[in-house]
Image (tube, rainbow, N blue to C red; front, top):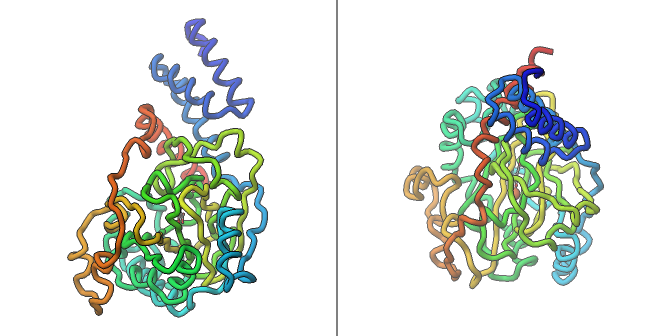
Length: 380
Ligand SMILES: O=C(O)CCC(=O)C(=O)O
Ligand SMILES: [Fe+2]
């Protein structure tokens, strides 16, 4: 470091001070500019170390309060809606029949075991991870996901009677699920890859009343990586985005006004459902289970007559069309069901989903930092 020009050294010192004060975004952004402009390897190494620290900090558990259960007002639609409006979420116990969840879990874990992601045999349903964590977007991720996303049971679960009745109570009689059914295949021992705080609105757009249902496919305690919600965060409009390694590759930037809000979470039991509209900030907690993957699904519902974007009518990741997905399904009942629904198709606005230009370098640096952290844990 002694060979650095004085003005470079001053910038480095400023970046270090920002990071030491906890201003990671600003400190790392400055360090990134200085390190890349100087071409100095020691500065690049220091930048990656800062990124490692930042990844650890980001994935650490937030102070967590208990989610409010709303089963007491389940049959009172006014009260349910008032809760949703007040808290920005609804947490309901025992909605989805457990046999329906297990039926899907059985099929997903069969695929995961065949593909070598988890142990087969008697422990298959536990989803005991046997390989290195896989990230959304990697070729080995898509090899598995392309099989899971074809499962009739994955799509049929969004239409399950009790779940659909709940969504129609909350949203109104015309509520229907988008065919975009999402499955999450979350490895243990990779907290840095947990889904970061974000709003669904930039991904889905259309109606802001669009409401997600998050459903784990087995009991899922906080330590197993359940979902947490930033209570009341639906009142702050659409937040800016930064790159993140977790699902969706984007996190919301939480400005000062949101600093006083509380994160709420719960130990989910199989059958429990968490609902939230698309402006509510939510995140996954890190999966610290010693061995098991966290498997969950999330579906989005909206009222007829409202806006939706074309991506909500496509299979997740849009790697195949519905005809291909439907090949081998037992029933025709749910094929293209949304063609009977009324909605206003509006264009998706990419500007709402864009990342700042420096994100390409950031993605590379974070990937490097993640691999270093992961290998360090393995070496312990
Ligand atoms: O399950 C996860 O990790 C993310 C879920 C999520 O973001 C959602 O359901 O909108
Ligand atoms: Fe989300």
